[in-house]
Structures are given as structure tokens and as C-alpha cells.
Length: 243
Image (cartoon, rainbow, N blue to C red; front, side, top):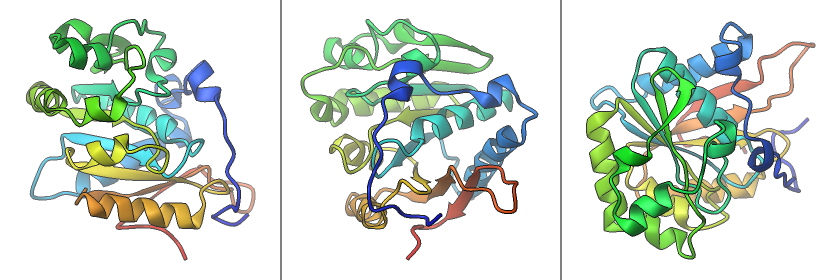
């Protein structure tokens, strides 16, 4: 199977059912080990500055960014880090479904009503991992995420958590992610084998460069096993897209 596909597959499965937290359910599974490898490689990708705010994204939908980011968040929490996971996908949120949380209040209400975020931090059920859900879908997601209040919120949570992760929309779908990418310490691009389109990945990298975002690398997701075995995930450094 080639790395890139000429067509993209759309799915609402993660919106309807959430993502599978295999790193929590089966921490000794070989796939959980791959998520720990992703965590370790990200930790080592910056020597001079501790990476505290991270954003996982993809070019288009159905590439697995929510699955990769949620499981990587679990591995950081298992390491003893205090992790805050924010659902900043205000259009197609999934975190409340994944962790079985109420979503009547969340990021959108914190920003629009200037609420104290402490009152809207949810226990994920996993030690050291807390979650802020997206809240109701607002009419102006990009404006909210580009607001002064959002920047202030990120500055606040950075002071209280070891790792702050944001689940965001795909880069080519809307401008929300490009807006946020410049405000975090690092961006990881999830590329799904057989679904990602080469031109889309290349354009995504260009969009990140335009806002001077720090692209730490990419996660190659859903890799077809060779010779009957394989772990399904890989991590690459640099501005990674294959020709």
C-alpha cells in the first residue's frame, strides 16, 4: 500500500464513539509501547526549552490525530506528569465522548463568558490526566481561538501543568489550527498511510511555516505491517512528507 492516497475517507466514528484509549486499557500492549516511544521522541526533540504546550493535527479528517494525541496524553500522565488535555476542536469535538464527560460547559464558554477555567477542568478517570471539553459549538471558532482570552488561558494553564495538549481540527479544513499553531511550543503532524494525500501534507507544512509554528515532526499512523507483523505507528523528525 502506498503512503499517499488520491482520495480521502471521511468518518464520524470518533465523534460518535470517541477514540480507543489502548494506552490506558492495555499499557503492556505493543501499540501502547509505540505511544510511549512517540512521547519520548517528543521529549527529546527540544533540548534547550521544555515543551509544555503541544498541538497534534493532520492535513484532513480521518487520519487519527485524536487517537494519537489522546493515547500520547495518557502515556505522559502515566509517567507522572500533570497533563491537561483541551478540546480545541470547536466544530467536531470528541474528547467529551472519549472520556464520557458532559459538554454543556467547556472551552467555548470559558472564552465567551470569561469563566475561571478551574471550574471546568474534568477528571478523566486516569490519574494525572484532566480534560477541558470543547463546550457548545460557537458561531465563530477561529475568532475565539485567536482571541486575547485564549492566549491568556494558555499562559495560565502552562503555569499549573507539566504538559498542555490541544486537540484541534485538521489544518486544511479550517483556519482554527493555523491560528493556534503559532501560540504553542510545538506541533506534531499525524499522517495516515493510505488516507493522507501527498499534496495535502505538503500544503499543511507550508501553512505551519507561514505562521512560524515549530513543527516537531510527524507520526505515521495506521502503518501496514510488513511480513505479517508491525506496531502500526511510527515517528519521524523534521518537516516530514515523503515524495
